[in-house]
Image (cartoon, rainbow, N blue to C red; front, side, top):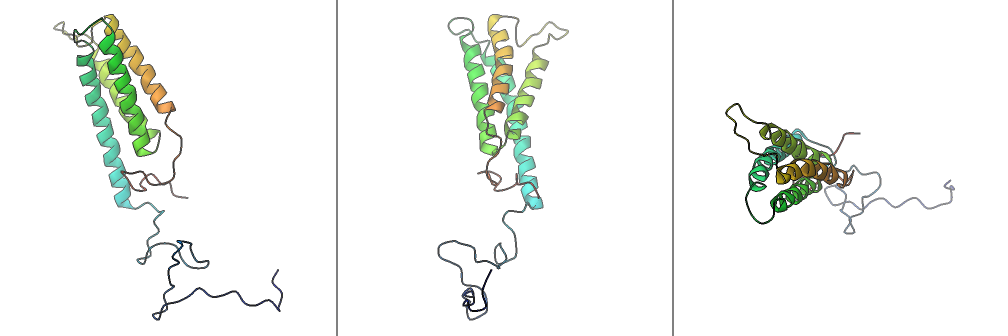
Length: 178
């Protein structure tokens, strides 16, 4: 508790126009409002941030679906022993989904492309009425479908649950309001 004989706390230095002088150490002066000169709080989500985050998640969903189609074709190429390209496609799926989650800074960034991949793979693994089949019932096809599902779940679980606000792409769009 301050004593009446204690000297008063020093006031934060002011410029000639009355604005506080920024501390070169980067420390925030007590009692001063946070944010830039325009009064914008950098920790608060703006509508523009939400649009950018939504567009990023939509792009990841499209890329996940695209990777599902590409991987389905790649796993069937005749190169070496039967399941080699199926395993390569599973590892690439794990890498893509995991890096998407890390890049977005949230597990949702991994869930979106993983779910899109799974939906596409399950749809194209079914036989069409004409008899066409993209993912055959071979060892490589089963490795790609089942191994890919395990890889997607593992990739999502290995993404850290939280990261400080502001991923490299969305610059704070994943900040929740408190």
